Length: 130
Image (cartoon, rainbow, N blue to C red; front, top):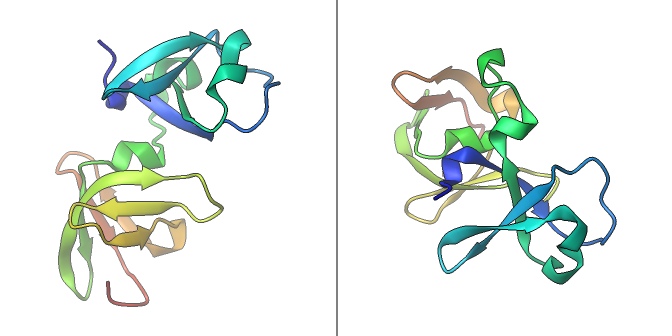
């Protein structure tokens, strides 16, 4: 069974002709990720699609995606601990983290001070209070 940590969201499908997609895309159905052949994506319009992370990057290259921050604790340099990231929405121009309590927080490189992968902590300096 494929877990969400093994996948990267590529957004909501809006067109039927995508180039450079891997052979399979995944869609969440009843809490599980179901594979569909990329050539058959016309039936998935309007749904969020995912691809295997291993197909998008070499895991040894050290690159992180916004999706990798799910489960991280967010600590602001002034406000202290803000909460844990429960989800990441990259469907708009502004990437947003949804915290466990439902609050939204912008994810932007300008706000990030440090990412501690070992402790799973995202240290930020937000110009406002959540």
